[in-house]
Image 1 (spheres, rainbow, N blue to C red):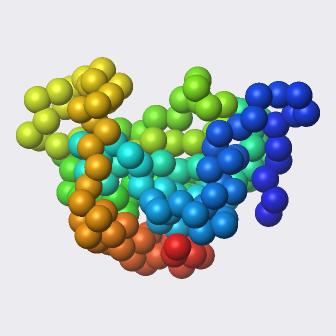
Image 2: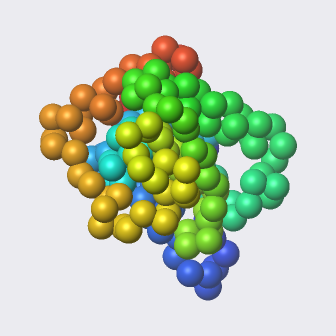
Length: 161
């Protein structure tokens, strides 16, 4: 399915550009292609296992998607949450679909852990340099492999990247 594009003259969509990099194999954090979305490992690995699910279709709001497609995206989000939880064993998962900075439907999936002193606060209140922790390359690859394998078990239609 080819994604819809932002209207002509609209600001270029950063998520659509990221999806093009994923499609071209030029995105190191790519985890899987699902029927309606792409799953990537996020850059805020202070929350080990943080992922972002990007809708393939360019839409600025969930309610603008066809009903069946929106439901399929939610099924993919639930499978993503189950996969992340199975691999990281968090105290809680936080899901956010914001789009204020990038108006393209996408979800942030943040594992939250008991040892995080700020676990009751929104992740965005933690200073950006503190939350944007990078994992060592082998730890990043191991995390991606674990989430990929679990996601594939839960959603056989997932194509691992």
